Every structure is written in structure tokens, then in C-alpha cells.
Image (cartoon, rainbow over all chains, first blue to last red):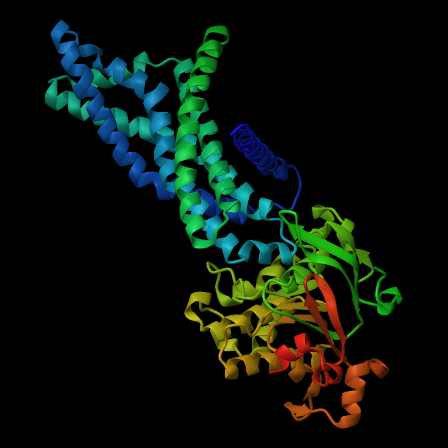
Amino acid sequence: MGAVLTDAFKQFLSHIQDYSVMAGRSLANLASGPRYFQDILQQMDDIGVGSLPIVLMSGFFIGAVMVLQTGSQFTRFGQTALTGDVVALALVRELGPTLTGILVAGRSASGIASELGSMLVTEQVDAMRAMGTDPSRKLVTPRVVAGTLMLPLLTALNDFIGLLGGCVASVFTLRLNAVQFWTRAVDALDFADIMQGMMKPLVYGFILATIGCYKGLTVSGGTQGVGRATTQAVVVASVMIIGADLFLTRLALYLGDKIF
Amino acid sequence: MTPSPQASEASAVVTFANVRIGFDDDDVLRGVSFAVMPRETLVLLGETGTGKTLTLKLAAGLLRPTQGTIEVLGQEVSSMSERELLPYRRQVGFVFQEGALFDSLSVAENVAYQLRENRLGEEDIEQRVRESLRFVELEHTGDMLPSELSGGMRRRVSIARALAARPPIVLYDSPTAGLDPLTAQTIITLLLRLRDVFGVTAMLATHRLQDGFALANFRFDPESKRVVRLTERESTVSATGANGEPATRFLVYREGRVYFEGPAEELAETKDAYLQRFLV
């Protein structure tokens, strides 16, 4: 029993080590050539533009739901005017980044894992290596760079559409003035809030892309393994994003106090 | 175990000396030594799981032996770092068992892949791609995706991709596995042409003896553009590799060691029960 646990723990540590090495190299690769800009652009299109519809739609609905939930509470105290403040703070600081992270993890971490996993089991990764290409540079780095750069942009759009959704909902359900909602929402935000909201997706993008690549490039067990890796990529990336959220929030609050 | 006599010769293109490799404490290759001379074709014959593919991947630097040294084109592959291996691998063509074409790229882009990596000019690339595809008689498929091709065609594209950068060595991993006899014949003809037109040194892993015998007993005549049977004198040359003529040698693995090494005739006339299983 003890031996089984020790082995499992060792295996877990070895996964963490391999993952860290891969994630570190994905960034270190940028320091020297060859760099694959074409692939970076392609991945930015795939992860960024490709995720737009789901991110925008979810953003709109989440903003509207926030208004319904908080509005009913505020109505009790006759403070419905505060809805804009609450929706803006919650969206920009927390819900926008984290929801975008989880949504894109569901879409892109799984996509990356299944694409790279299929390439691995059909020996395409080996073929690449056999032709003198470093898969870490050609496959991992473009995805990680694209993920890290696109997530903040997607989050910004998600925040905007979320506020729009909130605005629409507050006009129709709370009979608030649209201009009033919008002005209060924008005024409620400090620079520190925006910093917090933009710092998180930077890390989330890195997490979801590296987890997708790691799960894809460590597939074993053929086609079935690819399926397993795809599921694991989404689960691990989502849990890691929520876990990272806790620490990033603490860090952002600390920095917000000290600096901004 | 001492290296085979050929291994000591400096002119060998590929030299394996006492190479061991295995997974999970179980060695697949247990001290393998052999050498491949320039323009020679070494046919690795054996049942599945005897380490044929492993040998090719070791030679290409895709895997690292747990023990022993591998030298290819005068470079000690077994001790190179991954960074040093990348430029090395560009000198070696590798044809994977299932072709391993990049399925998101068109046929022409697949063939052009390594040329782009080598930063050749667009015009050169286009010309080389056309030449390579013409060589495998698939010039018309350039714009198609690999998924639109038949199994045999995919193998041919994979050969075109391997030869596009004109490597001095080509490694074939069971290029005829799972193909119908006619298509397999087309592939072997291609291998003959590659050897006799470009003079590449090759290692061919296969479980089909007839593939090896075809290489040993036939040659491609560039003038008549046909495959012709070797005359008796030429066969002797083929077996010994005299005068720089392409030679074909066979290597049979059994339980992780070299069980047989020699020319086609010796294999054909063998009385050994294990080897005879390949002959039927």
C-alpha cells in the first residue's frame, strides 16, 4: 500500500517536473531562433477569433444574470442604482477573466490536446523531429504565445459585452436609465480593478495552452489515449485556472494596496 | 561483444557498436553491432517487436541508446544533445510506416516542409517539390490533402517528402506494410530507382522477405527506365558491393541480437530453421 502511494506520488512529481520544463522552454524558445511567426498568427486566429462567439454570448448572458440576481436584492433596499457598480466590479475583477479562461480552456485546451495527441500517435511529431524541427518551437511555443496574448483581449471583450448585457437587463427589469447604469459602472472601476482583470487572463491563457500542449504531447495508448488526454486537459486546465484565481486575486489585492 | 568487422572500417556510413535499448527494464536490443557501407542497402528483417523500427529511430537520432555508440556520416549520434541532433537529422531521410504525413498540410506543402525549414528560396522549393512529386509519379496531387489519397499514394508522398532535401541516407520503416502486392511492388520500384538514380545509402526495415530480395536481385536501368533483373555477375557484385556498386545485405534480429548478417544468396540457401521461416 505504502509502495503504491509512493509510486503514485513520484509519478505525480515527475509529471509536474516535465510540465514545468515544457512550460519554461515554451517561453525560453522565444529568446532564440527559429521562431514560427506564421504559426503564432494562425494560433492567435484559432484561439482568439475562434473563441469570440462563445465568449461574447456567454458574456452577454452572465452580465444580464448578474443584474437579475443583484437587482432583486437591491430592490429590497431601494438601491437599484448601485447595480451598475456591482456588475462592473464583479465582471471586470472576477467573472470576466475566470469565465473566459474556463470557456477557452473548454474549447482550446481540448482542441490543442487532441490535435497534438493525434499528431503524436500518427508519428507526425516524430516526422517533424526527423526533419530537423523542434516540436517545442513549432508546436508548443506558438500555442502558448497565442493563448497568453489572446486571453486578455477576449476578456476585455467579454467584460464589455457583459456590461452591455447588464445594461439591457437593468433597463428592462429594473427600469433603470441606460446612461445611469453605464456611468455608474464605468465610474466604479479603478485602475487597480482593470489591472487585476487583465493580469489574470494573461496567466489563464498560459495555463490553458501549456496544459493542452502537455496533455497532447504525452498521450499514450493510441486513439483512446487521445480522448483521455483531451478530457484531462479541460479538467486540469479548468481546475488550475480556478486555483490560480485564488492566488492571483490575493496578489492583485496586495499590489492594488501597495502600488495603485 | 566486439563490433562486426565492417564496423572498424572508417568509410562506413552507419555504424552501430554494441547498442542496447529497452523500455521498462526489458531490453529490446541487447548489444547490436553492424555497419552500412556507402550506397549499400541494409535490409532489417524480423518479426514485429524485434526492434527494427527502434534501430531506424536510433540511427535517425530520434531515440537514444541506453548503451553503445552509433555513428552516422562520421558523427557520433548517440552522444549528441537534442539541439545538435536537429541539424543532423536534416541529412537523414525517414519514411515512416504509415507515412506520417502532416494531415493539415497539402501534399505539396508536406513535400516542401523540410525545404522551408532549410530556408530555401520559394522558386527552388517549388521546383524541388515538383521534381520529387514527379519522381513518385504524383505530380497532379500537389493541391490535395493527404486524407484524399489512397494508402499507397500516401506512402509515395512520404517517400517524395523524404527525398526532397536530397539526403545521402534514407531510412524506410516497413514501407510496404499493409499494402496490396501491386502497390507494394510500386513502392519497391521507387526504392530501386532512388538507389540506382540518386545512389542513396539505405536501411530498410521489413517483414516481407520479397522486398529485400527484389532490392538484391533487380536494378533500375535509367536508360530504358525499367526495372531489370541483375545478371549473375551483377548479382555477385550486388552481394559484395565491389566497385562501388550498390550492395544489398540482410540483417536478421532474434531476441535482441543480430542472428544473421549476409547477402541474399546466403539467406536463400540457409538450413537454419529460424531463418527458413522467413523464406516460405
